[in-house]
Length: 204
Image (cartoon, rainbow, N blue to C red; front, side, top):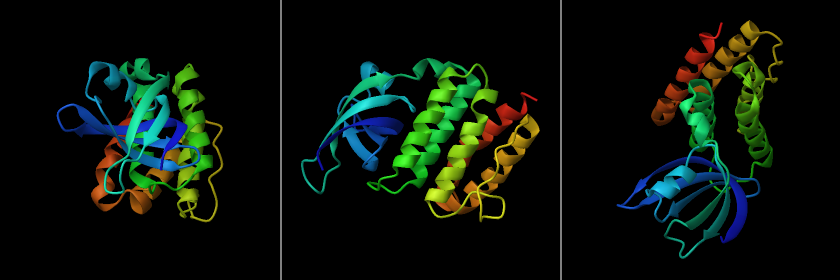
């Protein structure tokens, strides 16, 4: 698989002395894991921030090796990583996506929804401007993976017009995500969700 696409950085981890393995979400090829040479260098570390949008050039050298990725930054969310609430929302939504989607299966609606959520987090003056987007994204993710999104599992939740209702919906979704998608070995990902909801609750 050789391709060029716009992609969202979801996660990265060290590989060897200088490289990194990165997980990206593309609109037409879904979740992709790839090796980035020099991924631990200062310049590339700034590119491999979760939520960043990049131009991806992917090269496959053999079926037994990870693809090699060349990345060019298109949009950076790095400046938001010093702001507690936006940083928590970006880290959670990207970690959730990276942990739950199967590789190389297209989810164009999820890519579009995640991109819209990240844009909202970046541009809204406060969390009240993007919490409904987060609710909608988590609902869509559950639905796309076969688990519905509503409290009873058969319908998506309505978006709440008030802050208390939004927090209540987030609580419902947190329980469903923990039970259906992030149980067992993936349960540590829920730490990012709990950090986010704690920070949102303090807004009152």
